[in-house]
Image (cartoon, rainbow, N blue to C red; front, side, top):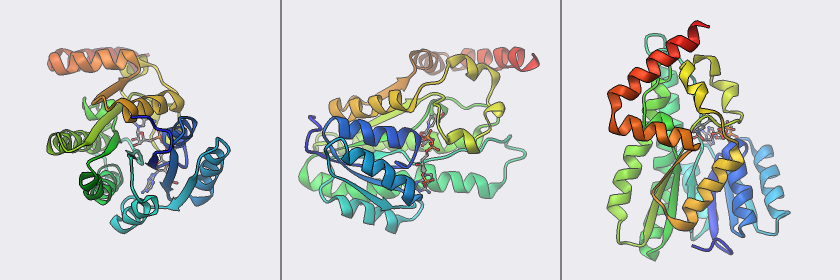
Length: 260
Ligand SMILES: NC(=O)c1ccc[n+]([C@@H]2O[C@H](COP(=O)([O-])OP(=O)(O)OC[C@H]3O[C@@H](n4cnc5c(N)ncnc54)[C@H](OP(=O)(O)O)[C@@H]3O)[C@@H](O)[C@H]2O)c1
């Protein structure tokens, strides 16, 4: 799909991956409709997109609210690309995690995807075109100690995405997943990096701009799954092929690194 002149909706565009995605979409010529709760930051992203020569609208949106998501999608009209990106994490051992916090993460990271997808999908199916790109995580492919609540939300997103892909196959709607590893963003204001398993540090962090390019590539070519960086991609292939080995390695290497 050539993104020039297309309409793209991005949730969580007030910072990090969502902001970088909005800018990359604009660079590739798409008009953007942006959602997040912090309107001032969102307006700044919209203004930066307009400076690249496209139309950009900011719509105050809390993705946990189905009505907000409907308004966001309605503001866009015919949506060519929907990027479900809004999300956050808090990390805690399951024995210590509060059920409210786990539910809040599920409300945003999973139900945010559900609400926006359900708002956009009927019209995409009716038009026989549209691409949905869900930003999941490598934490949706492998469970990590002390990240259980967050992992559950991303496993949910991936299950939802896989099922949706099969449902809409042959109806002109494409569904894609982008699974980043650690990405340098405001995400780590809430998520405590020190609680991540030691071995996850070996994977290396990527920039939001790198993830944004993967999201836009997925919007263009409809390729189903992108995992980045390459080392994370390799490790996830190991996890999917030899799960016990991958978990054993993760535990052993983490124990070694965390002892230091
Ligand atoms: N950073 C990482 O290491 C990493 C790795 C893999 C996957 N991811 C995923 O990538 C996505 C983006 O994260 P990021 O790294 O870019 O973090 P970020 O800089 O903290 O951005 C998160 C975005 O989500 C928005 N958001 C949070 N709750 C929302 C809600 N209820 N309604 C609407 N928007 C909401 C925030 O906007 P407001 O606060 O203005 O609402 C913000 O724009 C998330 O889904 C995250 O799980 C991140």
